[in-house]
Image 1 (cartoon, rainbow, N blue to C red):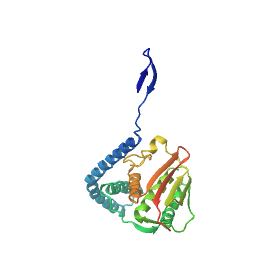
Image 2: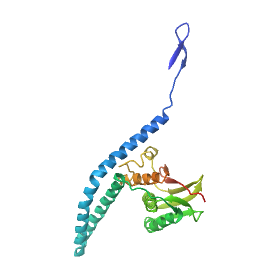
Image 3: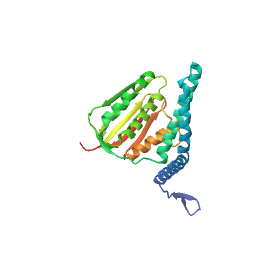
Image 4: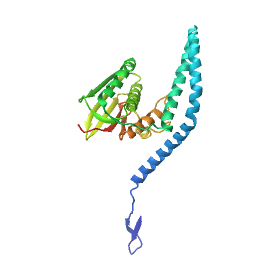
Length: 253
């Protein structure tokens, strides 16, 4: 800021020179995020295989113990051990994806039955949690280039997150529309919502809004959508719900 002085030596105006650093700040955030991804990838590559070997042995022997166990209480304890082993194994699986991402092999598919299949899989779980799950799509066929199994992984993750965000029940709407040559898939819940300051951290390693989460599931999901040349943006308001929006390029009809 440069002052201009009058004949009495008093400033009568100022000239301010400013630089817009918005893009620089965005680039810094992207670099910071990439550094975190690289660090997690290196960690994953070093430990994932080593963790998996003893996990396999632990699971095998724990399952063997259940075969002739007659005490209900002891059986319950063994089943808890098996559940926890499975949870650790899921974390290791997420690590493996980060450490050594598979080459995405995209094929032209109709995405509508892919989403319908995932919704059907989770209907029973939703009913148990008193969540009304619905799927709305005006089109029977929407062709996209995708890896079907990896895309299912994303839909499962986002819909399960929505169900878990409604511990007292609620509604979860999955909606698919075509807009500007993109497929817009929205997964909207009526759950507890996410505060604005926490929204921008979603998808970072080890950042989670869930009590027993590790943040890797969302991170892997975001990477899968990026590998499909798509993007994810999240809208949320505390106590009003959250919407996960997925945009994927649509194939011309």
